[in-house]
Image: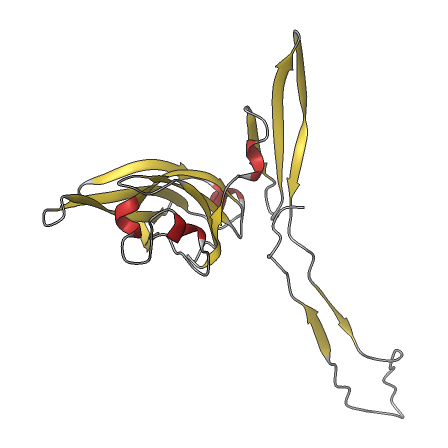
Length: 206
């Protein structure tokens, strides 16, 4: 990509078994009519050989949030008022992005799914910022992550596990009142009805 400004990358998909690398950044151009910079934020997915698999346009979405209007941003000018400046964290089901304000806009956090669907249009603070030196580590093969923090106070250095990110369990159970046994004398057709408890990702952090 020409004029592509690289911001950061994520190998979390590799850790969770999806097998690709993500690169975050943006392209920019100058609108000569208004003398403003227009930003096109992008997420590139590469295979292990560096080949481009897919590309996602990360134009910030306002959703139903009223916060953007108070900061001079709307669906028509948001690509002129901010640009992608950091990937704060990525779980298997959530991407936490930070957009820096420019040309009258204001910075904010936004949460999307890996497919680009909006989860939270605006978030003032990010969960893992409580400690200045904290790093989240994905647990291989799961949707869990552990954040380790380190800080010092009065010549003491503290280490600990600050937060655990996980998704709610999913499972299935039958509606049979009691077990049914098939015998030679009594051959029958048994129909099973399953009720699936879908994962609710509305609250990704516990």
